[in-house]
Image (cartoon, rainbow, N blue to C red; front, side):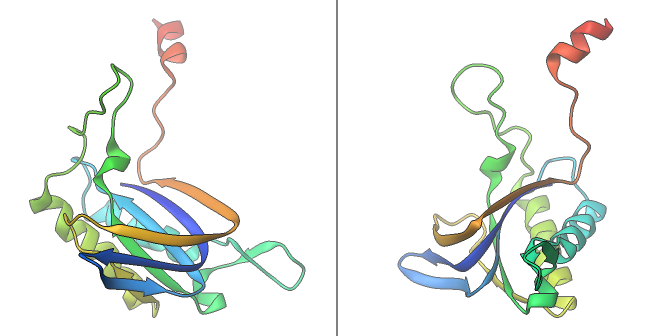
Length: 159
């Protein structure tokens, strides 16, 4: 599971011109579900997002979580985060989970965040969405529930 987490002063998502989810100060989370992801990945992602300390404390250090600052979380499904662009110029999305397995995991992340007492707004899975946000900082964090792959050069050196 991959996520792009942005600290925002506000964020909203629209489908057909209608706002389906919005938050004031908080986090915008673009979430991609991989074909091999399961419930453990969803739990890990929700916990990581909820506990990520990227809000400033009184000393100006990034030391506070979303719960500590009382912000909301906008979670938007985005299968394109699983794009493989290593070969050619057209992205391949074969690593993205099909909707029948991605939807329950996406919803599981949202539910786990709500169970932590966070206000959660969402987009509409599979819809064409317009996401508008104001990145605060800017602060953008990439999260992946799987360990990073070795760079190709490192793999070649080992063979």
